[in-house]
Length: 386
Image (cartoon, rainbow, N blue to C red; front, side):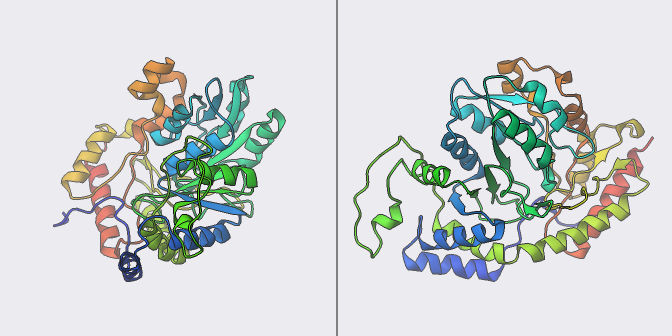
C-alpha cells in the first residue's frame, strides 16, 4: 500500500507558470488584460479557428455559445445524458429544454443513429460531448444538423488535443467549448474557451460575457486612452483573468508533450489489465486522435462479488484516488423529477453509470505512481473476483 494518498486529477504545474503568475501580480494587470489576449491568440492558432474567446469556465462558455446562437425558452437542445451536469445545466440556464439521446457502445459518445428520432420543430441545436477525449462521430452529426438546420456546439471539455478526420475538435461544429478546470489536460484552475469561425457569434460572446458592455474592461483602461462603453445587452460576468491566462500560456506550450506522457500511461494500463474482470477503453476510431483525458474502464460486475462503489472505496483505502465519470444525468433527482425520466430510458448510459471507474491519468504521475495504481487495481479486482 502507498504511504501517501495519490490525488486523482492532480495537475502538473511547472516553474514557468509560477513565474508568469508572479510577473502578472507585479504588472498590475490581474483581471482581463494582455495575457488573456495572448492566450486567446495561441489557442486560436492551436485549434485553427478564426476566433478563440476566453471565459471563466466551460460552463460559462456553453451558456454564452447558446445565447449567441439565439437559444432560449421554447427551444430544445439535444445532448447526451452521460456527461457532467454542466452540459445540461447550461441548457436549462438559457431557458431551453435538454433532450437526452442514449450513448453508443463501446465509444460511450452520443448515438447519432438515435438523434433524428428526437428532433421536433422545437429542436434548435445538438451538443455532442467528446467524452473522455474521444471524438464523436461528427460526420453523421453534421449531416443531421445540416438537414434539419440545427446549430452544433461541441462540448470539448475533455478534448483539447483531439482530432477527427484531420480536423481539430472545436473547429468542426458552429462552436466548440473547452475546459481548463484543475483536472483537465490544460489547467488554469478555473477557465474555458469558446472557438468559432462565425464573426457574429464571436462578437456576441465577447459582449455578452462581460456585462453586455460594448468594450472590454482592459481596453477601457489601456494606454490607448479611456473609452466610454455602452450596455447593449444584460450580460454576464464570465471573463477570464490574466492570472488564469498566465497558467494557460505555458500549459498550452507543453500540451503535446503532456499528451505523449498520458499515452504512455494509458498503454501501460491497457497491458496490465488484460485478463482482469474489467473492460478497458476501446481504441480510437480510424483517422482520429483521442485526447486521453480520462482512463475510464468498465467493471465486469457479473464477474465480481461487489459493486463499483465498493471497488472504489477499497482503492481509496489503499491510498489510490479515483473518479466516477459519470452517473447519467437522467438518474439524478433534478432531471428525473423535472423531465420524468426513468432509469431504463437510456439503457447504455445506465449500464456505464453502474460500472465506470476513472483511474489516475496525469502527466504529473511518476512511473512509481503508475505502478502503484496498477498494483492496487489488480489486487482489488482479483480479491473481489468471483
